[in-house]
Length: 368
Image 1 (cartoon, rainbow, N blue to C red):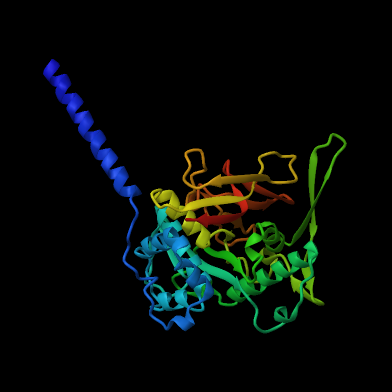
Image 2: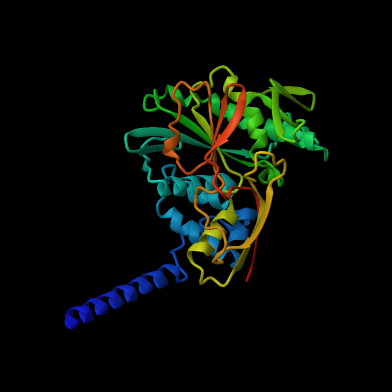
């Protein structure tokens, strides 16, 4: 009997040693081969954002990007060139989405040119087109000077999203044989100016559902939220149609997925979280959703990435799904079970599935 106990104890110790070894290997500082960060164009053509990530302080981000790129299908053949030059942010958004979809257990079929992603899980197939707003160099929006008022900036932000999303509607992806009869999603992130990433999803909600929201307190000091129709937004004397989901031809858009945090900072935090032996001190601060039905302001947060009491970030953290109430082919919300889901029902906008910690805006800093 004693011999069996000794053998069992030895086996337990062996398994513990193996577990510690595996954990140490997982936490060790990685050294992925350079593909994204091996220059393939003259240095003079490198974008400012690309140059930032090549600096020593962003090594965790660069290594995480290289790791994620190993699972990315560059079906256009120009990903690296654009990543290093004029398309850094849009390409990073695609890399992020690909990584998120893999983490959610989707199979990705890269055999079709467009939309960007054909995803399958269980018995469901959906399509996702990656969308980014970018700085307007020409046209109406390029000549508008935005003041400091909240309302002016909100309208400009909506106008930029409207221009970009509407241009995607015109492509009519749903007419393609492989897309017909299946859910189509637009996945949006905004890069049109330096402040665009500081906006939460509230202007997008206004634009998608064609509503303007306001609030007041009733006689019992309870929060009451009201909405009114906002069919257009006037920007620089030019009205822009609002309510994307109500416009002609948009019934084929099943939902819009939004993030304002799929940036270099996201990859930096995920890199530091996965490989804590990096000497970099990564700090995040910002606002998060307050789980109080009477709250009118968000919670504030501040933490150092990798600390034992810090939130453990997932690839999906920061993403939100907004469903089209008029969709011809509705999106099954259980395909993204961990993401907050927004709906417009019975005259009210509702959000369900908001996790305990849901960042709305944040700033990440790093020091070595």
